[in-house]
Every structure is written in structure tokens, then in C-alpha cells.
Image (tube, rainbow, N blue to C red):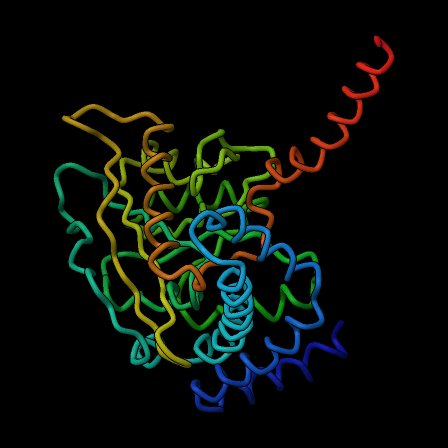
Length: 313
């Protein structure tokens, strides 16, 4: 691993020296090649888009959006290599912010000292970590799932180190995160737009029932935090827009809301963000895995029922 780490680290450093718009276009170039080769993720993206927009869009638009989405995903990866190596102030020069005043002030009497940023796999989402200078009274932090590849995980950690954002690994750093939330004013960025596996609760997401993460709702109730949806949109190669949407409260008329009700509002915020620019989200993920599995099993069940009927006849 050491033999590969330093040459790859040097390559990432060289990419960081290039103009970010050039790096973004380079990502789109390699994304176009990868889209042709990667049949599996191409199919996942098209299937997901067909599931959600099949009644609204033509087949041509579904395939065109799937391709553009793939190009943007690779573009975002390349761009993140570039922006992650910049200072926070320099990185934010490539970003337009809308609605940052919606963040509640430090001394708000309704809530505790920390805030939750509801983020997701939109645009160059690594830029979220660069916002520390916007709210100097908040320590930026987020959770992540470490890569299975140790080399990739080490490289990613090296890129993220410059932001000043604290990264907590979901499977290992629960105690450290709890301690941090109880000891300082945090802005914790939580991604709840993808499948939580066997965890979470069943709710509609983009109109389709699936398991949905409750992490943001649980944090909001446990630490008395409001939830502010903050989503990143790609505007042009090397240019982004970050929009702060309307706050999701953890209480109503002074009473704490349920985890379910908060999560329903979280899903609605994600739906608004996805529909705002469908190609901007991460479609190459089996978000509705259970639905597709049920669809695959239908022909088998129908075949079994036919055989049973034939036996009775």
C-alpha cells in the first residue's frame, strides 16, 4: 500500500494545481468513457430514473439524464480532488450561496448550541466541509462510512484534512461524536438520502416505499437541534451553487415531534432538491432495492400460481 500511496498522492497534488474548470471537464471526459463501459451502474441509473419519472418523461429523456448524471458524478469526484486541496476561502470563491441567513443564531432560545445540516449526494458534496468560515461559532463536522479499500480511505482522509471539518466514521466513532456534540457548538452534516440497509423506517421516498434513515431526526431530538437542508448544485464546470432550504423543526407548538414526522419532512426536502435538478443527484445507487426485488419475484410467483391452478384443474 505504501508503494502506491505516495505516487497517487503526488498525482492528486498535480490535479490540485490545475484550474478547477479544466479538472471538471476532464472528469466529464472520463465519465463519458466510464458510462459506456460500466453497464451495471448505467442500468441502475436508468432503472431508478424510469421508476421515478417513467410516467412523466420519455425513454429518450431518461437515458439522456442517466448519461448526464454519470458524467456529473465523475466530474464531481475530479472536482472534489481539486477543491479539497484549496483553503476554505479559496474553495468558496467557486460557490454561490443562497439562504445562508436561515441558520439560527448561536443564542437562539428555542434550541441547544448545535445545528444539523441535512446534506446529501448532490453536486460536489465535499464542498460542504469548506463552509467553516461562514459560521465561525460552529465546529463543522460530518459522518462518513470508510472505504473498504484502505489505500483509498487513506487518500480520502488526506484530502479532507485541510478543511478543518471533523469527520466521524459511522461504525467506529459513535462515542467520539457523542462527546463532541455534548461539549461544543457543532454543525453536523448528515446524509440521509441513501439506503440505511436494514435500519431506518419504511416511508415513501420520491413516492416509492423504502427504508429511510432516521439519523437526522434522532439527532435533532437528542441534542435539541433544528435541521437545515443544504444542497449543492452544479451550475457549470468548476462552478456550484449551495442553497439553504427551509428549516425542518424538531418541535411543533412547543411539543417534540415524532421521528417519523420529522423524517417525512426530510424526505420531502430531498424530493424538492432532486426535482430541482434530477441529473444532480446520485442515481447510480440501488435506493429502492426492495421494490426492484419484489418486481423480479412477481414473474416467479405468477408462474407458481399458474402451476397450482393447473394442478387443481
